[in-house]
Length: 125
Image (cartoon, rainbow, N blue to C red):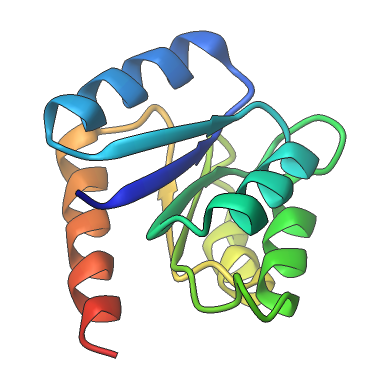
């Protein structure tokens, strides 16, 4: 059962996504800010991270950069998610170290496709 770390500060988004992922057979870990996300990722080494980019304490951009600098977490695929659909945000996410990027509100089917694609890709490497 793949382990997904969901780093999301919005309780409603966190609950909805975690319930839907659990129903799909994933183990879900949760962090409510970027600093907590980095700590959970280091401790648990999830198979994939869904990272909100607008987080308290440490934003998702910086949390992603830090995770990609840590030897134990650098190869964990990260999907950045943001309600900010500004031109260049996807590129900024990729530059920070995200392996993919999605916009909010989350379209679960699309996000699930990205999760499955990255899990398959990283399972082969």
